[in-house]
Amino acid sequence: MSQALSKRIAPASTDVAGSASKLHLLDLAQLKARLGERWGRLAIHIERFFESAIQRSLAPGDSYSRMDELSYVVLFRGLSEAEAQMKCETVLRDVCQRLFGEHGMHVKMRSLVANLTMADLPDDLVPGKALDELLERRGKESFFPSGVCERKREENAVSLRLKSGINGAAYEAVAATDIDYLYRPVWDTHKHVVVLYLCQPVLRARSWKSPTDFCTAETEEDQAILDMIVLRECAARAERLHHRGSRILVAIPLAFTTLVRGRFWTPFGQAYRDIPPKVSRDLAVLVFGIDPGAPGVRLAQEVPKLNTTAHKVFCVEDSGASNSGVRFNATGARALGMSLMPEDDEVEAADRLERLAKQARASSAETFVLGVRTTSLALRAMAAGVRYMEGPAIRPACRDPQHAFAQSVEYLYSQKLAKA
Image 1: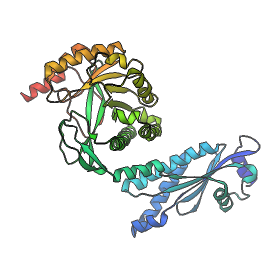
Image 2 (image 1 turned 120 degrees about the horizontal axis):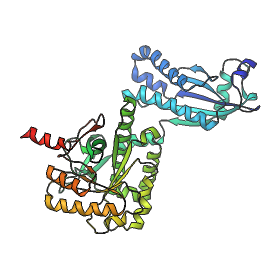
Image 3 (image 1 turned 60 degrees about the vertical axis):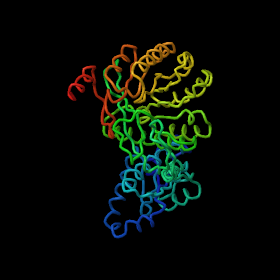
């Protein structure tokens, strides 16, 4: 490359100039075929969007050049190969998800990244054919969408045997695409706010105005797939809210079997770690289906795996055992709680809550309760020291949570009086 461009790419040392990358769409012909006559009208807009995404990734002194339709070579000044790869992934994610993904078009993008020395740079001012050939020969290849995204499409195509979560319901075959989601507002009685929403997968063919139990699968394998699908739903929800400038906490329901079985936890844990930090900070995890016989040592091994990624960890403890608090001593769980069913006796449920609250305090944890149906039970729960409450008496579930909001005790009475 000429002396002028050598000055523009200020090297980190006398030998290393930075990194070069090639970004392009692999299945351009298929995209043209799908768009048909519309390609002529849309091509210029797609190219402008692609170039805008590249330009947003450039620092002062970086440069790029168009090689062909939706094919570009980029020079990154003073970046390592890993840093350049991260920038490429950001560009490809932006292009795939915001441009093609909006219309359901599954395209595959390819990137090639290589470190450069000053001797590697071509002589001409414009990074062109020589640099393209160098990248094809030496570049580290990767694709977007990644294997994780490919697996997501595979998961969406499978059929799962699920039940609605209501006791006594039968399992039925359900396509992953027929799963819908409600969000159950959780009231923080100490701060008098609703910031947290529990994601509730439901069967789309059903109508659940206020579900009180979890959607579960017949087998551990199907449950792990369901948990992965729900994780991605929650992450996508949090990311959309983040882009709108609104923030809430979204709680992901996670089956205990997915957490403790290595073959299920490995892909789930990796998918969770792949979520951008700005999104994962808005996610909590609620572990349900905990084996009543699981000793504290086992829980202390398994539950902390979530603490490195989740904003908060909640554990459903429905065993009623007298040593519940002791079992969760070393888990780092933020709160222990229970899930109530419509047929539960209110007096008995209140007694169970009081016992659980005492046990939770013994392990320095807060207490929560799901499925609160009456104002009187909500008041008894508050008197027992329960901090987080969810259920029809608190707030109805919704399909599209938008924001956090304040809520006082008076709201429980205002709703009741409005119905009188």
